[in-house]
Image (cartoon, rainbow, N blue to C red; front, side):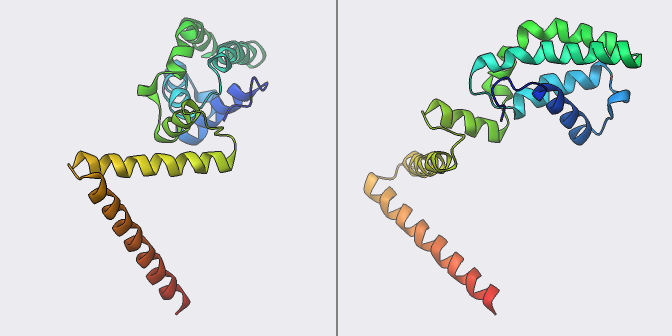
Amino acid sequence: MLDSFLSGFWVRAFLDFGYNHEGIALPSMGRQEVERVVSDYFPRKISLRSPEEADSAMPELIAFWEFLGREFALQTAQSVVGYLREVQPSFRSWMLDPSKFGMAKSFFMAGQAAGFDMTDKSEMNAFAAAYNADSVRDGLEATGASPEEARRERKKRARSIRRKIKGASRKRRK
């Protein structure tokens, strides 16, 4: 997660996603690769504590690519800078668009919206427990089960899970 306006965060994230997820080293990156990282990976994977945290991304990336063009004569730098300037007004909305979120970011943002401090492990676990309990209840209620039937079904599932854990534990000891 982004540590509020930490200098260099966006460049480090950009290099990580470009190299580790796309498999492209910086000298080989062009506008198309930059576009994938900025418009796909960033909104899908980077969680923000506040919308303002997105505002430092484009200036930092533009400065980085201008530096690459100036100091290393990277041929693609100018077209990349043009792209980054072009998308700068839209970037914050991309970062806040739930349809672009990945599974982990969706979970994080839902917990944050529910008032949990998702940077604290115990609060994140509390949100996960609440979320899972609601999901099970919602699933059972969607089948038309009465609240009492839903309660019995939850207990039955919990016993089944405990039995499986116990069995797996015995197998490991043998």
